Image 1 (cartoon, one colour):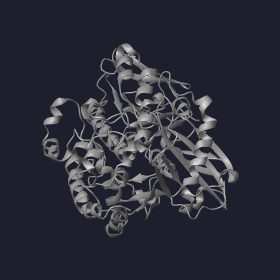
Image 2 (tube, helix red, strand yellow):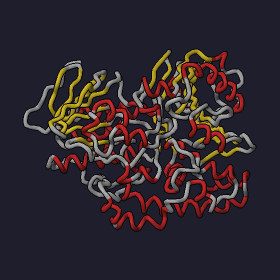
Image 3 (tube, one colour):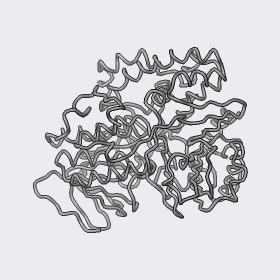
Image 4 (tube, one colour):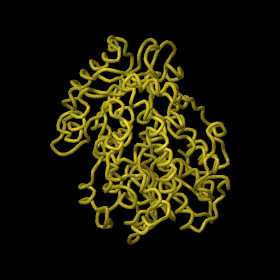
Length: 525
């Protein structure tokens, strides 16, 4: 790859990792006039939000739900672009199909009348509570949004007026499930409004009650499919970053971060050593720290302390290219085991994968035929399992058996003959997440989001252990999930611009300068 010409006189920033947070940061910093170079170890952008291509099929590697697009729309606007000009977003209705092994189903929709009717089929009393749940979480999100948009650098930030106003709505010591029990008595209904905690890799029985906003956001703002998959969004972001002047060096991992004392001053890669004024680390936090930064330089986030932290679950993945159409299967199907609570315990113990697991299937070609050759379909199958830990699961020995179990389990959603129709297959286990995708312990959703690992207790966007180092992505504040990662990019870009004494050319209508600005979806998309 030809080397990007260096521009004298401009502040120079390296971004390590071309995941969603790294790409959003590169866009914003390039727009602010920074000479940005992005280093990505893979030959494609997106990281775990990228695209796997094989046999003529295209699969999202990780996220398949695109939620709350207004944050990314705002970043594009800040850069003088319109998201809708770069990516086609299709709002799904139904959003997904929930099937309960213990009996019952629910077709989720943002149409409140239809949703109430669906809930009533499970529990008429719970359907009556739906408006109260929506109103309460609308207020909760409005109260907490300014907190998600702010950097948390220490305890004094807890005294902010925004956080103090939000506390009465957050009930921080309740779990998602316990908080939902105030509205919904039927356990299946609670699962329908709490399985979203798996987006964070957590159990609804442990996940803090703040995250009831995840289900609310789906119903209020929609579940979207980007044409071409979520990886197409990453490709659009990379395209805009390049057009704004950023350089992307794909297939070029950073081998070493260079330090003078505690200050990061550059990086070494296969193409040589280069100096920078600052670094933005978008690579998996724990993996990057333990591999690229000497332990002696890290006080709060030493190897020993990282080893004691809680990490999310992992996933067992099947990416299947299928002959024929699957028109009777929803775009998103979530199958919830009657042994859901036992599943959770098995996942947390990580000594053996669940034997009667819940699972998720994406049949994207029912909406977007561009992802497969004519007359074919893609199936993305995800089973939550434990992350890697010492004396844990030997996935080399377990993979074939668990593949068989997973394919058999698909019969529960009507896919009885699917194996003979497979024309392409890729399997990704927690071992693959760790060693192929460079994710610490294969914890697909990064550091867990418990109360001891949120806000200032999470690694900070202006990284507290080193000078000249900034973090972006699911491992820093505010946390995991695409909208939240995009929010972390806005925080990081703003901090870095302040520290470099830049006057960014971000669009004045953007939430970069007006935190409460919220365009209507009808206008933005």
